[in-house]
Length: 433
Image 1: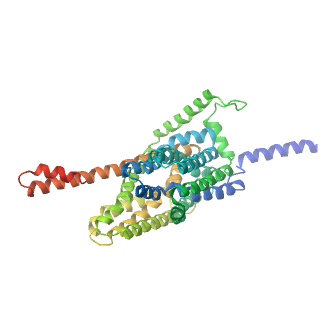
Image 2 (image 1 turned 90 degrees about the horizontal axis):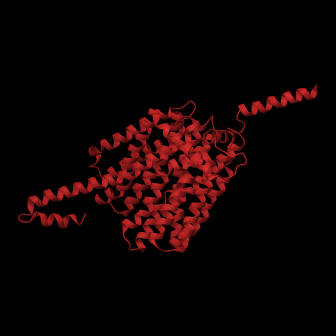
Image 3 (image 1 turned 45 degrees about the vertical axis):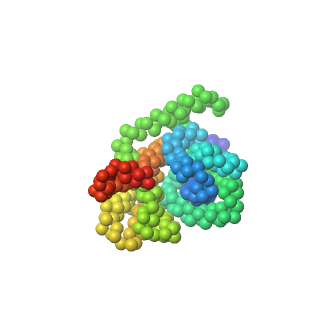
């Protein structure tokens, strides 16, 4: 009789274990939280520090600024544009595998760059391999946290974005010291060692019951003895890709993706041309450093404000997202009114920093509210892809507008004052643009 009751009790406990998600919001989840927050700090040494490396390369190489800028452009573009590819690999191999693989690619890219002093090689190693590693290491971080937490998910995800701002401030002076003390190649070797910590943090992020259940649902074509099969792999890729395509039937998600593309389009152009604007107003290099510091501090403040106001009992993330983007738009539209002030650039940098930090912190919580946790990996990959399209096209479009505007001004000026041969002066001046 006791044996019978023991079997019943064991069956009941096993059922309760399945239904209560024993590894969500407890135990292993907090270990994963510490691991992800730690690897975010280490990841910032490569994620947003390309400008420092490019400045040193431009100073010591004569291959042309356009060629050197391709390193940072490829690195940043691949981070976002590979989002759908990373989502497929997350569905098949887990978030932990993707993070470890991304950290490995990052370390290989900087380790290889230590031995070779060639811009062409840097384009391949840091630009392509490093950009791919950044994508595989960055995108799964929010997804793995979403799987491990449910009660305070929005708050934890938003604070992870705050840590990115903190990591930038920590990484910038450290990397500047590395460059001054050990030179460019020595810094590459040190950063290689730091990025290996991403692999360590990724190994700690073991899949929990929620992630394993979703992986089985999305990729049903698994062999019984887990044998590697290229045919099975292609079937899993197809099923995961079809899931991403079906998300385009979600009208709310489409509007959010278009919104993400639009504000990244404008934001990337602003961040690229703000230093140039300060220089054209007669400010020196110190003012450029100051305005970018103001922008970074305010961006971190905006992320922190968003993190502390969303969640249970707080503001709705969608309303906060719309409100912050609305104020951001007004600050740009009203710029002609306060653009005459000598401090206009600093004011615009502060406003843009605060009200662009919030949408960054709210991307994952809003995506979850639109598609649910079971489709998060695919939807977040699409969100990163649309962000990448905006980041790539924004500066190009603004550069074309600036070039067209300057050229038209030259045409008007020379046509009015040059007299006999306006077309010759137009050509000569256009070469200076």
